[in-house]
Length: 300
Image (cartoon, rainbow, N blue to C red; front, side, top):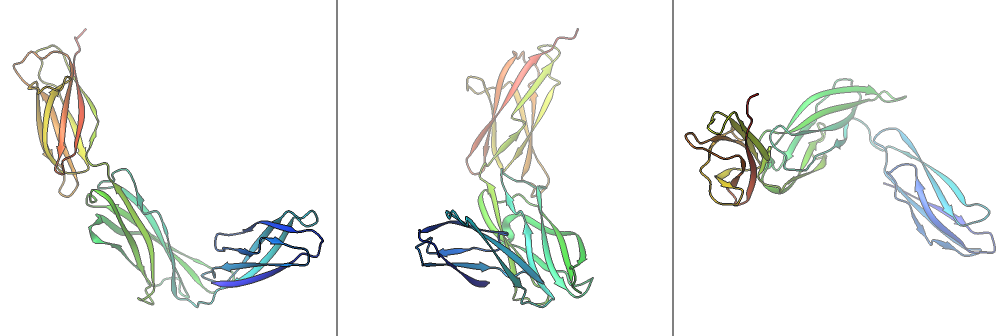
């Protein structure tokens, strides 16, 4: 960080209030002391600015005051990098997952390095802790010459994808990137996973349409996501147990966190049109319901 103080003097005969200080980038956090400058007094504007990863950066500051003579003042600070390539310069991306993510849900991050060669070392990227269900895979890279310098900026694109169902509830972790030239230099990106919704049924309403009241050939399938299924039961719209439906559970791919419920009408029964419900209980005790609509569609 570069700390640069600027001194402002009030040469007038009335107090001047500094309203705010704006910077041209989010790499600086200016501070003012004091905010009201008495006649003949002084204020100090402290600008604490991050150094750029490469070359020079000019940061502009605009000071807004209630002065009738000079309501705004403009300052400029030139900041130079104090690092010499090669090195890991940063990681950017979104590792925030909401709404009960499952296997196949993904996001992307980009890792940046600077070096004097067009083709150079790939950084090491890890997901910590390992039990989040996230896998990190390199999907592309490119290199570009920095303006006016014999330096190459490398961008490595990584895919973050759930190859296993994440743990239930809220999980946090981080993406840890290791500098390929200095293993002690690490860049980190926080990971946040919201898997609080538990079991989910897709769709939550299914329809069994038949040609006549004795037709038992129709069926529907419901996908269960978000956890293991402990039990399933059919009820009538009034909540009483129903034997009108046959429910068969099957498991999806291993570690996918997905299972299926096949719904059929029980043979040899005259089942009235109407609404039935399927109650699914998860291994951790939560319960969710799906609606089954039985209707007869007479052929023309």
